[in-house]
Amino acid sequence: MSVRVKTMEKAIAECKRFLAAAEELKRCAGSTEYTKGDPWYCGCRYCAAAERASMDLSKALADVRRGSSLTTEDATPSKVRLTDGLGPLPARWYCVSRDGLATLCLDESDASEMAAECTRDFPRPAQPAVH
Image (cartoon, rainbow, N blue to C red; front, side):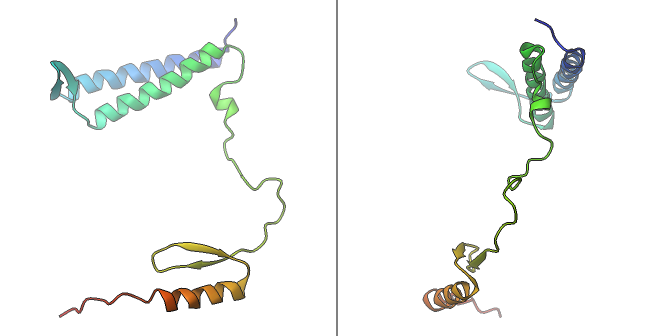
């Protein structure tokens, strides 16, 4: 099985980045927690950086295992548009409550009726007096 040169170079770069983050974690995150006698590094920004680097390394290694097929970078579009190919979308009317709940309505008059109904059925709660 063959592997793209750029795929291997990316995996090597991610490996170096992970090793650097792990070394920084060991150097900077001095305090540890013990769980059943096993030491752990406390959750900190160094832990988060090492975890993120390990996830990126895992993705790069998965691309190496795929060999000459698409990489995750090639298979992921840079910008996904859910409306592509649907043509112009119709206007939508919503009634939004004071609590932020939205109700889809048929048209503008339905939205107005729904707003009036919600105002009638769910009046504004009493506000505390400020002295």
